[in-house]
Length: 308
Image (cartoon, rainbow, N blue to C red; front, top):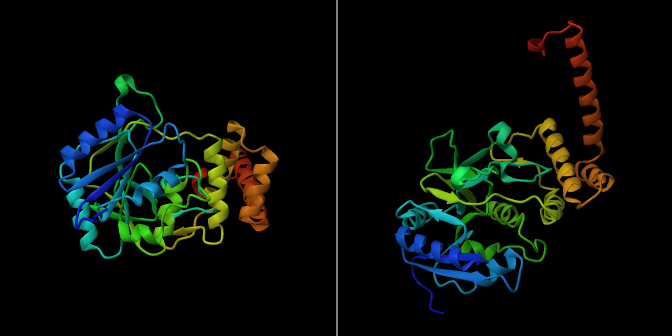
């Protein structure tokens, strides 16, 4: 296949013809750059998304790749040209998305883990996990620096834009992530080791589904945590993640495992202790005891809440 000098190869793992057609029309109307659509019908083969994406990337004719979920609608005109212009003006550019995290916890389960500490960046419309009348989507945005492109570490997989030469160094890990979860976190974290990832705030994207926390999710989360345990936690600002946030995420992961029937309580707890170390367990017990004592002192009137 002849390689083109400029343009975008839009890659889609698809199961629905109507969604593919809608996405093709959307890209044709809004990209503002040369493009091709490589849509892989996965309804029969049922490959993992990493395998699909790597397979399609080998066929790409353009120097930029854009991996998009098929239930996405983009309304911003010229988004493709804008992303190419940015990538060519920023030599450090890795993956560009529309949502991402600036911190990766040891007990990572989502790019959105850092939301309570504002270690996230995002701008999109989606169901936010809540069914709404008429299928309405909720607008979500957090851009504290008012940036057009904000630095991030992990990027959400509904939209992943990357130069083909960068992708060639760090393709999707289809040997480890064989399903449909954590492929994006692993991919973007790998690329963050050699380039800088960004969240773009110039594109209006409507994403018509939210994630499912099933067995594949829990199994893939464990694979991700174990693969990266010697690196995590990390953050762009160099700050450490808090004990309470790590504890909260560990507890949330254990709960998801139990509800999905993936791992039992003892197995999940054992994994969490091994992942974090016995010092983490001791610190957790100590902090829980201290918090309990403080609550008792407040109840007795010995301390006031604002004093702690």
